[in-house]
Length: 347
Image (cartoon, rainbow, N blue to C red; front, side, top):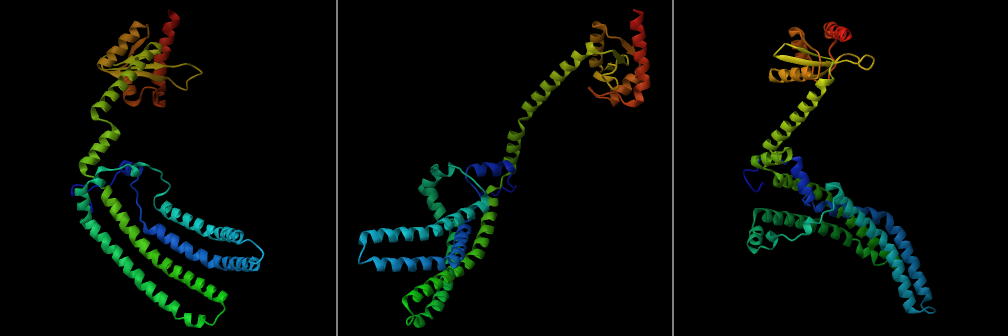
């Protein structure tokens, strides 16, 4: 359950990432246990024959050397062989437990869960956690798992012990073999039993994890504000960007070939370089006060200003700064540029 009734919103990606960095991940302890038990059962099933053969050879070697070799040396050799026999089992169990965690939350290394928290050592809050609804539910769930394990273990042990009477007349080696066989069978039973338990526990942990990550509407709003930036800051950035773009645009006006005006409401500055541009390009445009400013800069730098209200209005509405003019304006703009070029030749 969510700790706060106001936390009704699903966790945002940023909230999930922050929780992961702090070591708060979706994790069920039963999943690696199930992986380990099932892996142990499968491994023992295929490994027991090999291990039994090696142990038999080791026993024969030890008994054959008792009268000629030093006892201490035999003990060391026996321990070494026994260590190399059980080492693969421990390695496989280690990999299984590691895999059981990786499949849940991937690779993660974080030292934050190791940092002491005051809430953990606070006796008042510890007492509250001890008698919380979550703790009672955990105790009830663990009790059910224990009872189920006892029932299954009882009937499995009863089945195994039923064959012990017939084992009494078998050679010692076969007795050991059957004991190992029944042990493997017991691992298989508990391994199979642990799989549905781990699945149910994982689903519960996922629900609990999502509930604990839930956020209130205010938290979502604050996070969005922090992530996207404060409105005043964003407004200042946009204003600064507009100022820079305006200065850059005004710097292009002196380089223009012509400025077409309305004459007061619109102004569009065009530049065309034969052989380099596919069509005339809009290097600056503006309306009202900005149009007057463009016109002033053009006159100041000797850029021709041509009054053509329909063309100025059409270019302003259909072109952005940096765009080449559309094909439908080629003829009209060509006439204006031709007029400007003729005037230059005259002067």
